[in-house]
Image 1 (cartoon, rainbow, N blue to C red):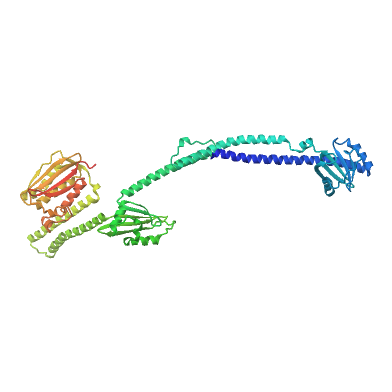
Image 2 (image 1 turned 45 degrees about the horizontal axis):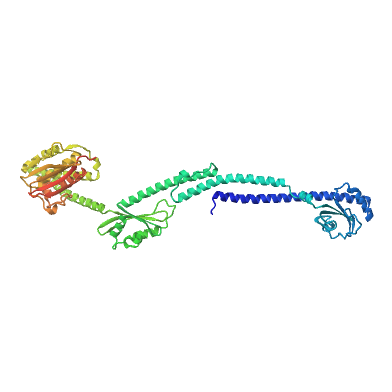
Length: 586
C-alpha cells in the first residue's frame, strides 16, 4: 500500500523521535546510575576511612583487638557489613560472622585485588558466607584492607537505578512532540499533496485550480507562487502556440517558399510553395527536401553553408546568402539565413512576374527611346537646316517650323502618356477622387475631338443616361473615352458610327460598351492591342500621330477604377470594347 506524503513524513519523524527519546532516556538513566553509584562509593569510602582511621588510632593488630571495631559500628548504617583483611588475605574481623569459624583467604576477592592494585575497588557479587548479594567496597590502608558492604537488595537496586520521573517527563515531551509533529505534518503534507495533485493534473494538461489549496504557511505561499508562475507560463505557452500557429499559417499561405532545417540539414518544416518551387527547379521531382543541397542547382548554398558554420554566437550579424536561380522559364530569388544555433532557413520567391515586369520596363524604355528618336531627330534636322540656311525662303522656313511644331506636339503627347501610365501603375494613390458624370465626360470628349469627328464624317451616339455617376478620377475617366474614340477615328475608317452605351449595372459596377462600325481588327491582334507600343502595322501610329500608348492607358485607367476591359470584333463589322467601372472606389 502506497502511503501518502503526510503519513510518510509522520512515520519518518515518529521513528526519529522514538529513537532520539530512547537514546536520551538510556543515556540519562545510565548517567544517573553512574552518578548514584559514585555517591554510594563515596559514602562507603567514607565509612571505610572512618574504620581505618579508628584502627590506626587504636593501633589494633590482632584478631582479638579488632573486636573493638564494634564500638564505632553504632555510628554507621545498621546493615553495613565491615570486614578487616590483612595483606595476606586473612580475615581479621567481620561483623556479620557471629561464630568463631575461620573464613577463607580473601586476597582473590575482586574488590580486594582491585584495592591492592589501585588503592580501592568495588564489586557486586554473591557472598557464600552470608548467602546473599552485597555491594562491596574495599580500601587499602597499609597494612590492612578495610572492606565495607551493603546488602544488594531491592532498596539498593532502586537507589542505583535512574529516576523514573525524568523518564516520565521525557515520554510526556515525546507525546507533545508527536502531537506537534502530527499538526505540522498535516500542514506540510497538505502543501505537498496540493503540489503533487497540481503537478499530476498539469502533466495531463488539465490543472483544476479551484480544487488545489494550500495552507497558510511559507510552503503554502511557495505553492501559490508556483501555481501563479505556472499560469503565467501557460499563458505564455498559449500565446507562443498562437504565434506559432499564426507563423505556420503565414508560411502555409505565403507566396514565398519557406523551409527550415536543423543544424544537421534535416527538414523541420516546409510549406507547399517550397516543395512546388523546388520541383520546378530540379530535373527530377522529389518530396524529400533533406537532400536538395546536394543538387547542382543549390551548390552555391551548400558551399556558403559549409563556409559559415558553425556560427559565432557573439557575432553582430547572421550569415545571409542571396542569389537568383533561373530554370525552366521561371526565376526564383533564393535566400539562405543561418541562425545562431546553426539551424538555417531557405526561402524561394517566385520573381518570374517581377522579372517579366523588369523586362517589360526595359522593353518600354527601349520603345520610348525608339519613339523619341524619330521626333527628336526630325526636330534637330529642321532646326539645323534653319540655322545653316540664313537666307531660306519664308515659305520653306514656315514649312520646317510647322513640321518641327508637329514633332514637338508628338513628343509632348508621348511624354504626357508615359507619365500618365507610369503614375497609374506606381502612384495610383496620388490621383484625386471625385464624383464624375459619365455622360457629361463623354460629351466633353466629343467636343474636344469635334474637328477630327467632322473631318472623318463620323457620327457619335452617346446613349449613357444622365444619372450615371462614378466616384473616381476625372482625368483617367476622360482618358478612357478620349483614347477609345480617338482610336476609332484614327483606325476604323471614315463615315462610321461610334456608339457608347451603359448596357447593365449591379450594386457595385456599371457595364459599358463602346463600338464603331468600321473595319475592325484582325483576331490575331486582339489579345495584344492593350500592350504598350504594340502596333498592328509598323508605322501606323506614327502616320496617325499617336504615341502608341493610348489603349494601354485605357486599360490602366479601367483597372484603377476596379474594372475589366476586353475587345472583340462585331459580327456586323467594327471593333467593340466591353468594360466595367466600379461605382464607388471605397
